[in-house]
Amino acid sequence: MQKRRTFIKKTGLLLSGISILPHYAFKSNFQKRKLGVCLVGLGNYSENLLAPALQLTEYCELRGIVTGSPKKIPVWQKRHGIPDKNVYNYDTIGAIANNPEIDVIYIVLPTGLHSEYAIIAANTGKHVWCEKPMAKTAVECQAIIDACTKNKVKLSIGYRMQHEPNTQKVIEWAKTKPFGAIEKVKAEIGWNITNPPDIWRMDAELGGGLIYDVGVYCINAMRYTTGMEPIAVAAHHENTRPEVYKEVQETSIFKLDFPSGVKASGKTTAAENVNILRSDCKNGWYELSPFQAYNGVKGKASDGTSLNTYIENQQATQMDDDALAILENRPMMVSGEEGMKDIVIVEAINESANTGKEVKLS
Ligand code: NAD
Image (tube, rainbow, N blue to C red; front, side, top):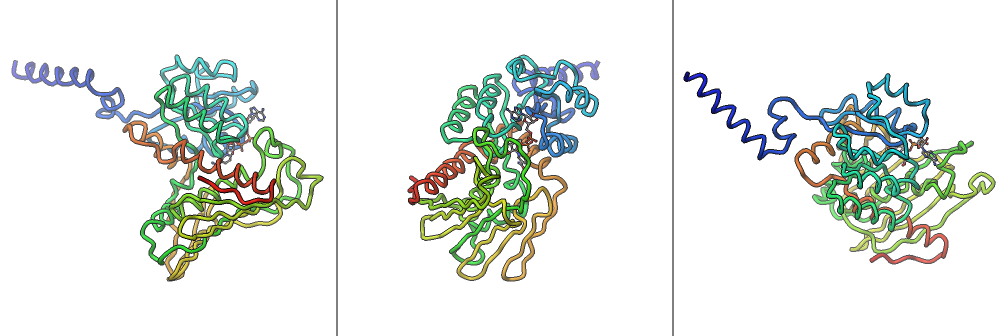
């Protein structure tokens, strides 16, 4: 009898728990709840980086796909155990609204399509993860933010470097300034690309061009390394192969002025191998090189400090950070507003390069 009463008491507590706790909190007492992620666009990044990373994640897993290529469906279903009911195309994506197995829709499409599909995703009522660069224009970025706000869903931009520990040290040093006041920052990324493939990255309409693709890493790095927002931009483009780089730029060189006089210089290029973030300070310097890579981000400082903390998988870390923020109802580490700030600067870089004039930022 005593046992039975204890049982009823416990069950009663349990049942009252169901009514007041969110579903995931209730379940987390018994088995860890994983968020279901649906990848939109099954190109290189989804196939070779995100899907494998979703096999390592603790707080989310791959449950659905959106693709316009029917031949990819059986391959993905077999490899990732995705049932027919979780397979969508670009016309049926809105029906994800009725699929309780999907919690997050991750947009991994060409940049020029991000806003259209991120807004459709937000309107399903699911949380939205959107790859970088957030979109082609600040107006498109704002439309994504507005759709997520209206639907009360969370939005995160896929800046995996902000989840990477050596980068996080640089972000921390913007506040603690162990080498004194930061005076100059340099952020450059490029490859010597002799024969660029004829894909959307060469197509301006679809958001191609290195200033978008990797320029946002440089701009983001300038902002997190200084901990400030720029007040002016001056830029120019260089194109030694106009017959190849017809719509997008081969090289973009840009200078950002920050309050308190800090100067940052940046470059994106298809004519040279370079990958460095350097901060020159009053009493020393530090740098990461490479500062943007899927693995092996490392660096050093003028006092001999090494920056070489290892993590197994950046994408898994990023997606787990974002899934946990959703589960615990915390702000996302890289918000839509953060993604939009870089696109405002990309637009200012293009405006300055086109007009030959410095662009002031408010
Ligand atoms: P990709 O070309 O390999 O894949 C693009 C996918 O979009 C393909 O499956 C393609 O079929 C599909 N698609 C749908 N409509 C299309 C259209 N109209 N034109 C062209 N393709 C169309 O590209 P990717 O390298 O996978 O990049 C996708 C996104 O992921 C981009 O926003 C890119 O910036 C981002 N990305 C981010 C990282 C990172 O480290 N965070 C790395 C690579 C790519």
